[in-house]
Length: 486
Ligand code: BES
Ligand code: MN
Ligand code: ZN
Image (cartoon, rainbow, N blue to C red):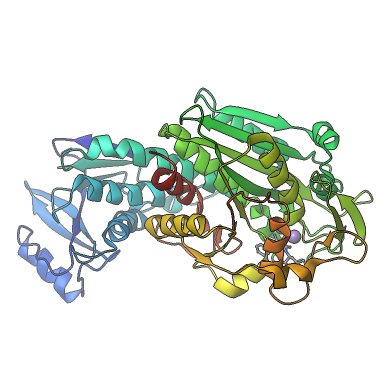
């Protein structure tokens, strides 16, 4: 979607849109249009859209108003985003190629206008590359939004939001790709491509290098796959030289069959998005790199494919992690924690982080607990937890805090190794978090975000179509902006 700022309305464009606050009139608009909105029960509530036709300069124009809720709402930014997104949801495949978006109404500030435009941009992302027979009237038609009467400062503020949008789009792209296209090596290539000439440093470890480091848990997950595993690190040094880095770690299981503990067939295709944690980290890094964040940040992604095979690991196998701790693999489908434990350990050894936050589609139990509304947050540090919760509220990538503690920890003790990779039937998301906690060095603030319910949606949402949501990229960016940057 091209967003173009302009001083004059392009005459040929037929579709004209604006934002309207709840409870405020539209007195400058055609009386028939205003009556039409009223009888259609258009109130201006957030995300509501009304369309009518008006005559202007002797031409028929298609006029759309998008509700932004009440002007004084404490959810104003979200509502404005929804207004912009709702317009795109309606017109993206409508046949209209261009829209004039008049932001000179509803008392918008520059930040407000940016929120509307971010909604526009985020909701416009789609992926039709493999739909070669898509009917003409189902194709994306809207390509340009001409922004008219933008409040002073909008264009300058938009640069930063556009960087964030790019990050979210990259996350959606990675999460959308099927596992025959996106596997560890091509995930790395996609990042090398996206971060080219940005000043970010990329480090890639192959299987031989990980073997040398003793990453037996991560490699054990990948050993049944024809695809080679990779560890990917993207580093951005935007902060002071002596500032310890903030490290994000992502689970990048490019496909999770469950391995020998194989998953049932129905719905298994969903496991192409079991790399959503790594996707969030890659997108968050891209957002920060694009806006040149003043922080030292590193994204580490453990990339593997979990397949059943003659060489796959078996239930009962004992693997030795890079930390030296041993794990009895009782269920090869509890593979995410095996990938993360080596990635987390390596990241701490390599970078001595000020804080470390991981993102993972780790447990189905997380979806049972929180559905698709919140990611689960587990942390050994209250400040870090609260900062993440705050960033979640601001961005809409919401989190809900869950408990951890010694009573849960003992549920993963093993009779033959230091720990087993599953607990019992209960508290499945917490025992997974306890497992990760055993790989965090004393004194390092750590948080774990189980985002199993958040990366994919069966229905369109405010800022995404059905499919990849882009969850996590904005959360990471906002957390760093609010808490790490000076
Ligand atoms: N990737 C899955 C978790 C998952 C399930 C994410 C459904 C999104 C939707 C993970 O690797 C997994 O299989 N977890 C098991 C753990 C169990 C074997 C202890 C689960 O949740 O069933
Ligand atoms: Mn699994
Ligand atoms: Zn998994």
